[in-house]
Amino acid sequence: MSRFTRLPAALALVALALLPAPRARAAAAAGANRLVNPGFEEGKPNHAWMPAGWDTSRSGLSTVFFGRDTLLAHGGRYAVTVANVSGLWPFSHNWGQTILVNKDDWGKDAVFSIWTRSTGVDGRGYVLIQAYRDTISRRAAETGVSRDSMAKQMNIHPVDDPLYDLGWKRLCFTEEETGWVRREVRIFVPPLSNVLFVRGGLIGTGQVMLDDASLTFETAKPAPPVPPHTNLLQDPGFEQGGLAWEFSLPPYRNMIGRVDSTVAHSGRCCAMFTGGEDGWVSSHAGAIQAIPNRNLQGKRIRLTGWFKTDSLKSNGYTKFYFHTLHGVESVNTVDQFGGTENWRMATLEADVPKDTYEVWVWYVYNGPAPGVVYIDDCSVEVLGPAGGEGKASSGARH
Image (tube, rainbow, N blue to C red):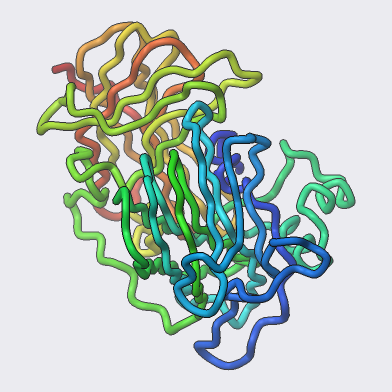
């Protein structure tokens, strides 16, 4: 998924898994559906089955199938499907579309809805909307070429890629079997955003069908309040299945991240990460949550969380990423957890820059690496106005 200054490679792979599709000029009417071919009815010229205006993620795996057919459409004649039969490699397989964002769209809410149908899902189906400042994808969509081709034309290498996200909302669902269900996600579109990505797909095995999508720009709702000393994280103890979290997994064989009910710091559940065979580069694996809330600008915030490790040949730690109009700033903790240790708490404090539109909270370790990491009882709270440099303090043991 790439977020992810550059956000580290694991989530970066997620965000760039989809090559951008050419986008028609935005409709002028307020509330108009900005998607091309929202019902998948129009086929791509000179292609046997691909719908016009849409593209698929690319993993290179033979275990994933994408299709467009008339078997079980929600509306009209066609729907699309993504099916995967192997969880050996942790990939996010999805359909998606790239939409150009202009100045008139800034300060509005982008609302993406789509109908989904699940069959035999073991993992997570999802719908996702992302607002990016991404010059390469913007030019690629305008000219109708792939993002990789445009990066070569612009002589921008991956390490220098200037992309970063300013808005992010994923809605996950785990029901094994469903009829058609309407899903909706909404984000605020910050200044400097120049592309939106909308996606629907599957992490795990099974089949998800998609139909009748919509993307509209509406008057923005007020940002949620951020009362002091209140946990801003959703499902902080993973008791609700962890659906509010991004489980970052580098795309290496046998990387595993899931909610575990055999070990917990409190309650019944925690997040567990393990596995992975040798990879060409070490990357971040762990539990991550985005807080796209402009009310955090100019606040001082504190992160806490509990780690337990078992024979871990790596280090677990916490991080903040502040996604601002001038780029991405990060704050690292001094706490590191490796080897075999019982539950220990990490604490991290930092000032949120005044032009921040999104805060990413990371509880991660460097993977792939032998061993197991457990994460539980996470918290992010506002302490008050910004007033000092970010700092970390070693946490308690329990």
